[in-house]
Length: 410
Length: 86
Image 1 (cartoon, rainbow over the protein chains, first blue to last red):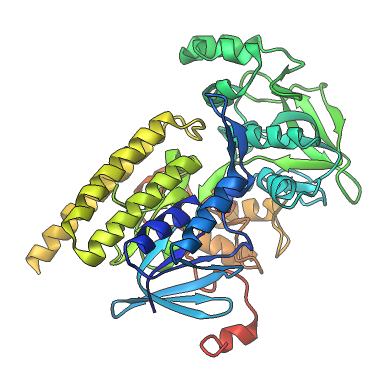
Image 2: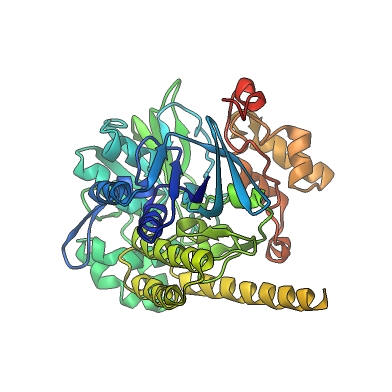
């Protein structure tokens, strides 16, 4: 039995494990991937100040630091069930049974599916899969690819593929369906892209992003957006073309695209085929919260955070006794925010477990730090993230009110 | 267009079932088997949620519409039976 089990060896889980272990807790980290680092593993991009963020190196550094702090790390182990009873958590995995007093869920996020005709053909994958193949496993997903979906995450990964010498023929929007209202709307996509303008050397994007603050300018820029697309890195991005279907006999041979109007509706007679031997679908991320759901933890559905998120305070506590959360399970944000949240969770757990006054102060300071890091984050996955955080805080306060009321009555 | 790969259920089937029975996500799952395959709904769950719910319902709910049940990852029957003695 350990003091703390952490599910997820990504930035949030590893950072929390290091702090807790260094302050005397026995900590076990479990992750289903064979390598520690989580989503950090694939990340490689240049920051505002010109410095490179190398996720693979960051992962190794965190992993070594955790090991030398006395953290036990179990990789390639999937958690299949968790139970809470008599002041202890029982964690069922695909190979062994683990127990602990405290549980921290730092399970991160999963990629949201974006169905399109032909998406089950071999050669179709999510952008995240292409990223892991390229930067972690060092396998080329193909020779010439098309990316369906234009997003911050998709663009960052496309740039990585490009750096690895994989030919990206173009990036197009998906056809409008009931599943992707926002992702298929040129105006909405333009707005979200304006948040990564500093990553794009293209003068056009850099020049236009301050102007995008005004809606009518956004309208104008999409209307006059060059039909042949523009180049962000070395590949054309088409805000005025949508993928209708992925074509191929027994594997991907290309993508059928058409020009679209300002609202994302295809224009008849403009269909063409872009030849490709692989296709990436960029559908965004959603918090991976299945284990929290098994505990009976209440949820909040907040689009700004990426979907259903377990109810939690800014101190990373949940309504479930001895259950904490950190990282993308609490909402989709950058790895740096996840690291900072890992610190908050660690100090909250330490305070709860030891009742030491000095951890209280550290909790408060680390909570402030999260907001600072959020404000400086190089990648903002959702421009309205602060509203999402506020909604969560309100729901938490409501829950707390009801809970203290009812316990007074009892 | 396939929605649930494990059980090979198409979008057209799920949509038609929704129109015919006006059902929630769970009933949609039971009627079509979408989300009941090997992967435990890892891929199609968010899509079933979207098809079966209107936006107002989503705002009210504090519960994820399709219940998660253990095991949340595929395991062998042998492992399931011998959980404690691995």
